[in-house]
Image (cartoon, rainbow, N blue to C red):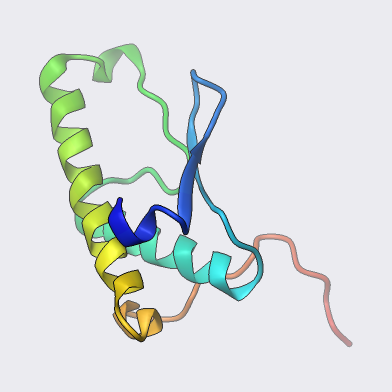
Length: 103
């Protein structure tokens, strides 16, 4: 993952790995936002978690998925290698799912 390697990692369990930001706060939201944006641009609808069902375990599908993941990771790495990773986002950063309402 190049420049993204220190920003994004894969967490287990083996049967359902998921991609996580290795930082917290805004850097984590930026890493998650960039990953999801680039995964979607590569036609990967996996968000942060992914697991293969038996209907998706043939060699061609696995190869295509890994190729697209590599392409998405390369784009994220390019963003983090730049002086302004935020500028690579096509919109707003994602927000945490659970937020406390401020009054």
